[in-house]
Image (cartoon, rainbow, N blue to C red; front, side, top):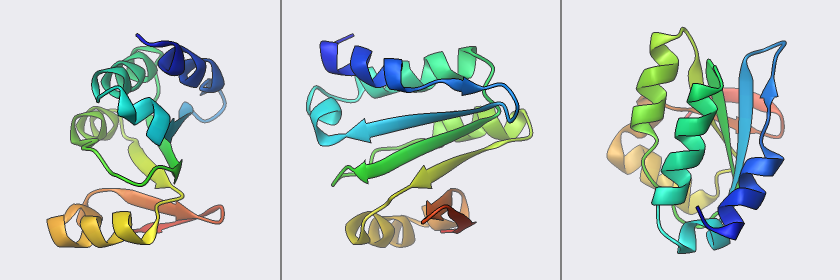
Length: 112
């Protein structure tokens, strides 16, 4: 795992009261490829998260979170994308992922 991924993991933590982990992604983290993101998602799920909040406010490009979504759904939870920009929202609608993933904007959750 790269140094950037290690810093991202350090900023993520399980909220025991809600079984929720927020993972804050950035273009810097994604520049090294998706392997680090996969490990962050994997580690969050191993930590027992039922709900993953993926903060995209610093990301210009979206990658697939469907595997993490399936695991969270099996646990009765979900993956929430936070801070998605207009380009990401358009991509969610074009691909149909707006039917699957939840979005959070300004602290308010809604279906994509």
